[in-house]
Image (cartoon, rainbow, N blue to C red; front, top):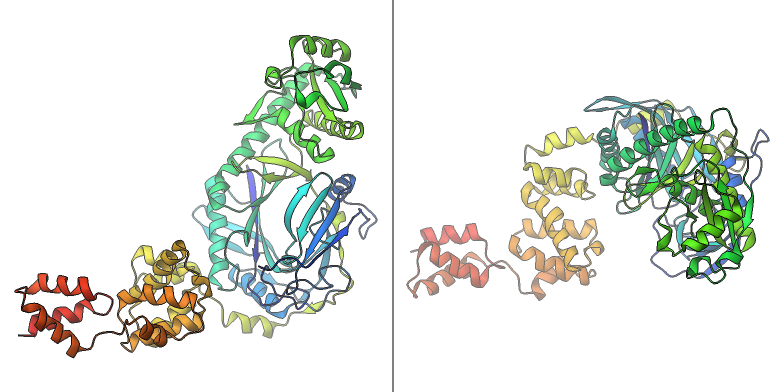
Length: 604
């Protein structure tokens, strides 16, 4: 197996890559929509990209939702791009240095043709920032081919027949892309590499967090197979399954190719006729087949092959169906290796069908229902995939399914998709600029963990080392000298617990949390009061911590008050541990247990 990974990570910049709009996806409702169509055009050398032609052939309409703070004329492709975001460029250079990549002397912005509607312009702007490099892994060094800075695509909202709706708030957010060499050894290694790259990116503290902000594309091939790019793996836990299933799929397709060579010898597979069989199914019990048009196609000598399992829940017939769906937008196909009674198709209908299309016992057939032109396009897709079965696995782009399997999307794009961006001038990168960034590089995850393990246990060190709260942890521990374990627990466990309760802790910024630790250090309240204070402040972000403590009556008891309570409680006859437990039950949010123990121990 050969395998390489491409990591796409959104950067945490204030503005988008080529305009002044907010780089945070909008929580507002769209204020308008626009509609567009797109077509394939020739690249710089006069060739039209195959992937672009595939999307163009689908003839779809695209609707784009507009948002007030995160959409402007640049996203609508009604105004040229502005200058490249300098903050994003600095982060991309930092990533290059962390990956041992050589930063280019001059950044050239290119246009990458994409006409699936995810970019209003019909292309994505992308730039190579670094070449070469490597990371060390448990199975040896994995090379880095390139580090690029590019625009994020639009977010898909919904899809129906012939139309897709996108939202433009995501379009143009800066994205760093890291492509590894095909040095990955196996499925577990693929996950390790993806995890390590993700850790390095998060260690910068300059990347967005959360679902959808990072995704992996995985390139896989096997001997006698082909390079397949699996798009959009967002869950680390699925990577092993994706690689394993794709390897098995390609290996089985190689075997099917061998079986076809036995069945056909030197004889060529001729193009089968598309036969209209609507009449056979006009009174059928199958609702799927009582349509305006039903077309059938005989696949000579393919009996039994369409039912061949490539891996769990995927057969060669599923691959044929993917092509019909991608080419024509149909719901799927029916083929002869399925259990036809589930549709249901009767024995009489099956006999009439086979007779009509001239299919013998060694032949398979495919059925598709809908309007005439759609059915024809669907069967053209099936015929194309049938020819490919004689060649084995194909170079293609596939999308990830929920179970870690994949489905066909489009042909693999080629060099014809790239051409220069004429609206953005080249950007020179000086050695001084690189050295300035090198001087403030983030720690590598291994170094950070080693340092944290001196003051935290393994579990807390793992939690805080790549957390977005790590810079705050360092500041509180370093400047305020607050105990590290307490700070890490508050930031990584208390806040998480409150979030799960539905408390809007995302409204707490770094300044507010710093204020919390300052007030604690000054002795205004005890550790046990912190969840209550955070619960209140999350809903009343405009108030100060001291004001919240006062309103909640959570001020830490003074030694005088504490001694008085101890004196009163002793009248009940309780002493030692029993006395401490009694007082803590009643006053735990205002009393420090260690301080209380000392008073009980020495106070007569």
